[in-house]
Each structure stands twice: as structure tokens, then as C-alpha cells.
Length: 261
Ligand SMILES: [Zn+2]
Image 1 (spheres, rainbow, N blue to C red):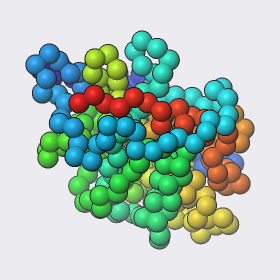
Image 2 (cartoon, rainbow, N blue to C red):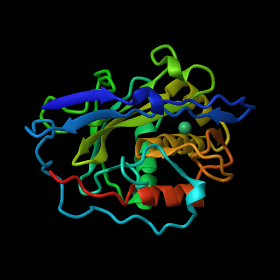
Image 3 (tube, rainbow, N blue to C red):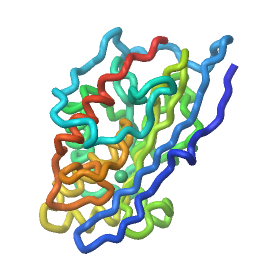
Image 4 (cartoon, rainbow, N blue to C red):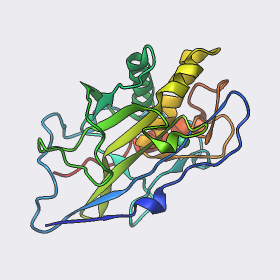
């Protein structure tokens, strides 16, 4: 039996911070779509072919302290983070409609930065011209989990990108035996705005850091008001690398349990 509900809007947030020149406001969209695994089963797909019995990667050492990062979601019964399954790669597809020059490479580099810090592994399956499914859809028609969609969009197509918001991201979670996992998500980037940033000083590093920030949301990190962290709500083009708190948070969301299929 499949039961679906949403705690979606409880976790939906967007920072509303006045921005000065060179400051990019990075929106966060946190989506939680619940797919409960009932007694009759059926909600969960089979174990993915590329899943292993142990985590695929090892998180980097936790370098910061816990008040320098914040989690999007914690487990129902304790303070452990909701995470992706570290035993299987996270698949992504890219909708490149407004992609910036070199955007696939910048995405690859940002994914590498997340992998190095968290141990989570990513596989980019290619491009898509299909619109990202709604937040409640977590299963692919092919039978597995839906891949994460990275959409290069614009404010006309994605109104949340209006103003200085350069992107937003979030993941959907499912529950089995009282534990929750993120299984798919969306990253939406403002292609025209990022193209303008790309033309500026430190353009490539700045655009990459925006993507890193959104991927941080994807894997479970929320905004934090701590200096020097990429997960601050406001982007700053002098800050293009993970801070100690970001690294600690990424290690935490890379240290979750594997999904017991
Ligand atoms: Zn953000």
C-alpha cells in the first residue's frame, strides 16, 4: 500500500535578505514528499543495480563544529540527519535550456566538491528536455527512483528565481521502518543571471559556488548564519570554497545509513 502526504510547505523557505551589488541571494526549497512503505510493500523499488552493501565513498573528516551547519531534516525519532543512501550513486539529469557556457563542466566540478566532502557519489545520466516532475513524484516510470533534475531555467519559467535569487534546490524523502531517506530532488538554476555572474570577475568560481550551494541543499543542508560558509543564505563572490561548517555538514549528510531494500 502506498500512502502519500506532504510536509512540504513546512520546510519550504526562501531567504528574504536585502542584497548589495555582487551579492547573490540563494533560495532554498526544501521539499519532503513522504512515501510510506506499507505492510504490503509496493512503494519501494528493488535495490538499484549499482547499489553496494557498504557506502561507496568516505566522508572527509569533520572539520567544523555542529553550530556551523544546519540540516534540512532530521529523523523522526532522533537528531540524525535525513540523507541520501550512501550505498548507491545519486543519478542526475540536466535540463540545459538556459545553461551557461561550460555549465556541464561547472556542474561536474561542483558535484566533485560535494563528493569529496560527503563521500556521496553522483552519476550524470545526460540531458533531458522533459520538465522536472512535481515534488510528490519519487518513482521513475522505469521502476527505480526518479533521477535528480538539474534545470537551467529563468525567472519566466520558474517564478521563484525572480529578483536576485540565483537558484533553489531540495529533495524528496521516503520512509521505511521509521527511517527516512532522500531519494530524488530538484536543483533549479537561473541561467541568465548566472551568465551575467560568469562574465564578472572570478566568474567561473562564483557560478560554481552557487551550484555547490544548491547541491548542499539537495543533499540535506539548510542555510546557516555563520561567516565563511557557502551555506549562508547570501552568496558572496569572494567566498567560493566550502567553509569548516559546510564540510562538517557535508560529512554528516554523507554518513547516513544505507537503504535496506
Ligand atoms: Zn540557499
